[in-house]
Image (cartoon, rainbow, N blue to C red; front, side):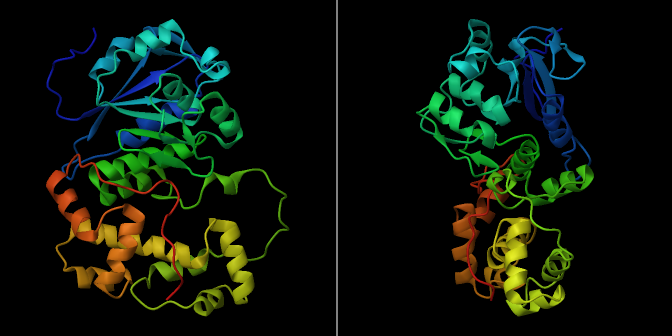
Length: 349
């Protein structure tokens, strides 16, 4: 029996639209990430359900099919709709137009519902006109075709995901994990998202864009990495940090260390450190009542003015506004947040 459109729900409902030819891995991402999000009492913060264009069998790109219990009417009950990738989008991919069946399904979505796509699921949102005039991304290998097919969409091929408020898109495959974690973080804060990431055994926030994962000549094997230096930094974010000290942790010259750090993270050491300091500040703003000067010192920015500058650049709001909005709206806050790449920039200091 279909859940009632009008019943009162204590949690945010996420409905995943399963289309023929879907990728099982990406279908499972919303269930895994949103399904692990709990409040301090251990209660689920999301309800995750799956529907198809009709209830019943949905073929996948693997050697098995799935069975969904709900038809497209379930979309009318969603607070968030997620469209994973499919390899059988037909005219949606080839001509940029919806099939009558898909258009009828999407018509069930209520105005104001948050829309999310994973990888080529963005073609569905674009064909429906939801992405016109908005930033969006998709798998790097499809970005050119995506832009050509949907010229009204502002395609950014170099990010892991985009956040345009009520419409969010991700690049390929694992970037869907990054986007869903970002949504959990935006809704319920860093502590909840970090707990989900820890249980899923993935990084809570992945820096860099998908451009760094595009096929390129394989570098020569390296005897050292920069993992130890990054771990050393995370224990000392509140202290002045010099590039020479980081390089010393790996027994490298500054030049070699900087080159290898960028190869591994997609960022310069300075950009990465600023990003980590913003994350530390974000957690302190969410979880404590510390004065701004204290937050600035604990996060390694030194002064409230420096804190304000970097938080504004990365999150789009001042530290005071971030704290006020989060405290006023949590749980279920909707906060201005960065894209899947770090917008923070700066030098090691």
